[in-house]
Image 1: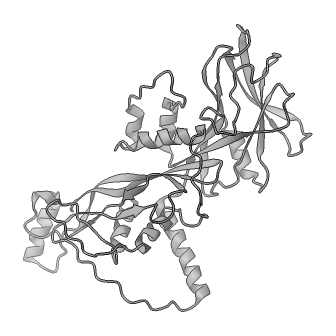
Image 2 (image 1 turned 180 degrees about the vertical axis):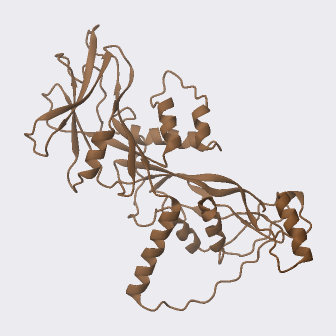
Image 3 (image 1 turned 45 degrees about the horizontal axis):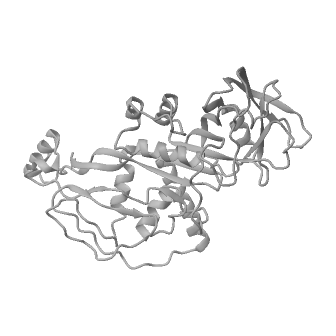
Length: 395
């Protein structure tokens, strides 16, 4: 039932909007102007309306955003999420961001992916270790963390080292600057290794998300084992003010509420607003929508620039949220993708008009993927699976 909710909702947003049929032989515009109210309805459903608008174009060239851009591009090759697992993805030796097979399994099983960019803690120039901080304060509470990975990029050591190295991650036990550190994970590597080091970060990120503070940034210390070699000398790449695409970042895979739950919350919020305002103002009835004669797919465009969300939403710039409209009348042509049941039901309706005709519904469903900022440190990719009508037919 849920799979058809968004396409059906789109059909209720038709009043006052320009609709263009996807049939190349029909170029009739039902309305001359496109109203923004229906697009704002869609933005509410996608949970993009309540956050403050960004006034400037943000920096999207760090490792946290670049990773999600690659995930977005890979998902949006008109494939279902499970097919991503079987895609052969060749990468050159110079590629910086790694989407591993383990990542693809997590991508297929979750509906929200968040990445957290890092910042370097200052005034520690005499310390051999690398100190980085992360902000996790604005993660939506309804998201449930499934898996998280900390990634740190390592260049070949700048010093003469032929032995093995151990890179260890520590975190403070308490908020105090004098509090001791506790080791989290260690990874063995070599001085000449080049690439991303990965650490399982699920438990730590889950603890951080439960311990939110307006001003607090969570700190990690990165050390090179018992060696006298500094973290920078070992080749570990620190966060940079210019936002390097090799700086440390965290990727978290989350399970979020289904779209039906979001719709129920939206309705509840609007009911509260109506009660506060009192009796609703009577608005003139919207112009009637005249569907096409035959069942077909219709366009409904959501343009983030038109909605002044282009600085918040990284990708896409706009998308088509198709819906199905039109009648399923006798005789059912090949273009209507009618099932055998629909043909039988049409014949039954002809003989007994009180029986319902077949309905024009989505027969193939696609997904919507939105990549956006949560704040200047956190990026969010959310998948709304089976939310767009790819093909329509009579059922």
